[in-house]
Length: 317
Image 1 (cartoon, helix red, strand yellow):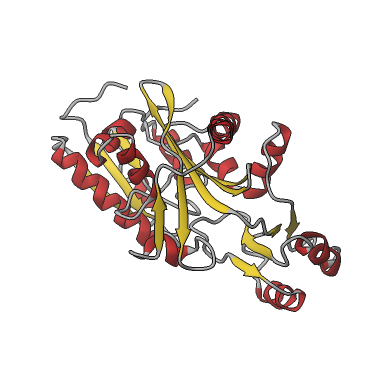
Image 2 (tube, helix red, strand yellow; image 1 turned 30 degrees about the vertical axis):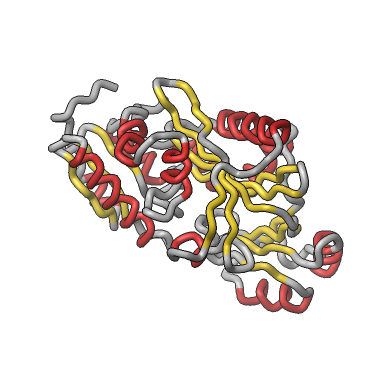
């Protein structure tokens, strides 16, 4: 789309998900960057309701989306912007919904020969039918643990590493399965790595791969957003053959899901085998976020990164 420094840009952040505070931090950073770049008609918009979005009609020409979690990253906001005919950054309604759904993402990954940890889906319909003991034994046999995670939430919110069958049973009893399905996923012992992709002049660019060494047991919410809680190894020390496959698989799954603009793909690296965990279609842009650090490693400073993302905004089909 045609953008000028006079274009009316709305940096859309906040939302109503558990990741609201992170989105507000990301939004403020992106807003400040656009102002520094000379986009003088930029608004910072804290979205708390559908009405807040509807009120943007005729006020902005393009939406810089930096919302996370449910309604922000799952296609909800994207659908309303489509209806308002406002171009936006990030992925389409369909790609946003699919990438937010860890279960469907797994099925797509397997269909295109990308490794992903084995998992079982726990829902309000299936909970009475599944044999939890058998699932525990099947998934915990290798490393003595499983992960329990929401099907459609991000930032490792409500994600638990479970180390015994009784703990798994107790945790599942406390879940609100009317609100969200959950995955019981095998625990892969390995290195946590992440791959960020940006779209620059209609080409997908893979940024340097990042290895994360959290001080917590895994890269949970606290480790992600608390300064000093995670060590970044950038670029990650991975042999060339494995690195090439990870980069190729990242573009493959990003494209297969239909993602665009920018995004992040998370893996566990066990030896030379990378297991896909999830896709983030609107990754964070805080001072501690992965994507800006990876861009900086590639020589792309924060303001330049924000402008690249802005220029990838579009009206989706």
